Amino acid sequence: MKTIIHRLPLTHLLNSEYSIFVTQLIAIFAKYQPGLLHLKKAYDRLIAMMPQLVKIKAQEVGNSITSSLEQLANERNILVKGIMNQIKMLGKLSMPDLESYVLTMKRFMEVYGSEITTGNYNAATERTNKLLAEYNAKVELQDAVDGLYLKMLFDQLSAVNSRFAKLFVQRTEQEASQERIDIRAIRIETDKELTALFDAFEFCSSEYEDLDFKTPAKELNELIDYYKMQIKGRTSRRNAGKEISNGAPAPN
Figure 1: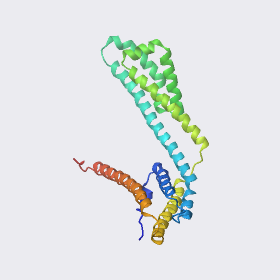
Figure 2: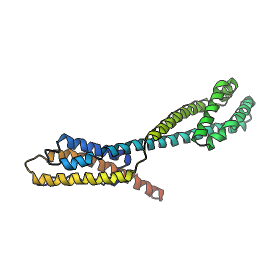
Figure 3: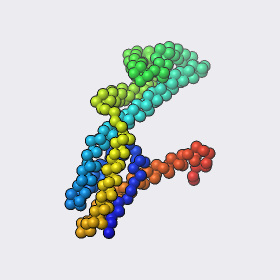
Figure 4: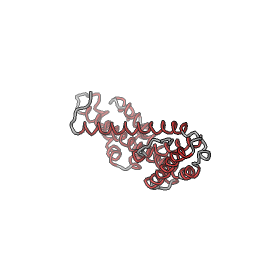
């Protein structure tokens, strides 16, 4: 009797999880010795795709770094604008004790602020470094920052800029050592080999009834069903978001 492997809509897997999914499948097949199940040829063809799958994972790590850089750059911009808005707001108040602080910080931020929020990654990071270096070197700036309740924002700006600089270097080094690949082409080829292996498994399960195909099938199907649930959950959340954006009431 044929043992069935559940099928997954492979195109719905994210790039970040695709290579992990295939690696997990390979590990299960390896545990049950493909040669004994008459699956060695199909299994070896899938194994041959592993070097390409490793490249997908590496490229996705780079994409993840880029996403993190965008988030940090946005946070940096928000912090600088928040500092400038705080100075502007306090400057409108009738508080003589703050006037000198406001004037000091207005002049200071006019030198650096706008170039940070409008410059490219390199320019913004360099400008923020100069802003923070001058702030850390001058007592009058530190006093003004304390007086205008800006210290928490400056501390966060320093932390964000430091994280950004480290990630930017990491991405640059990674891009220099990494070739760009056609992820779609690799996935199409891997999908073909994966489907062929599943088909071979099901065929051999009916041809060699004396061998145990049900045990590995159970483990394979449990893994595949897990990813099915992940895809279903993403689809449900995406559809719910569309309904809300189209004016439909959110579920209670």
